Length: 210
Image (tube, rainbow, N blue to C red; front, side, top):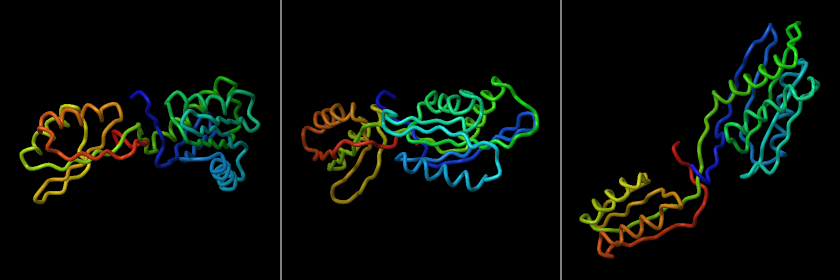
């Protein structure tokens, strides 16, 4: 979806083995570069006896900060391929560290690129990835006659219901993409004859398709 962010909300791990070399991926959701470096330090301590702890991370809504490292592997064979996996999947605010335990057989530059890319993908496959879009909560207060009309309009626009409170009046809340908010409010006002109370919260990033 245009204007969306894909982020890792729960990290994970994955592993691939290539000619007896183990490539262990550790993935972390991050908000700042400082967090990335702190997690990187944790991984280095955990796998202190490994030959390499290569990494890539992106921070910011537009990936304002991008860093990667081959950590002693031949230039361009580890960090950059891992970065390509992150950006290729459209991910933001994430760190992936791939730890290598050498198996005794050289893989060559092509083999290393494939192994580090595969390990990064394996780690991401075991993460929870969610999409965020610009949107808001819109609250409606209506009578029971208006309720069905509002639900019909929202269903037609593929807008999910967030909450509903049933009393003398019905208070119903929707999670609304920013580009659909005006249309939703306009149609509800028209279909209910202006008898529905409407309150729109400030636009922000909301989780979508979770």
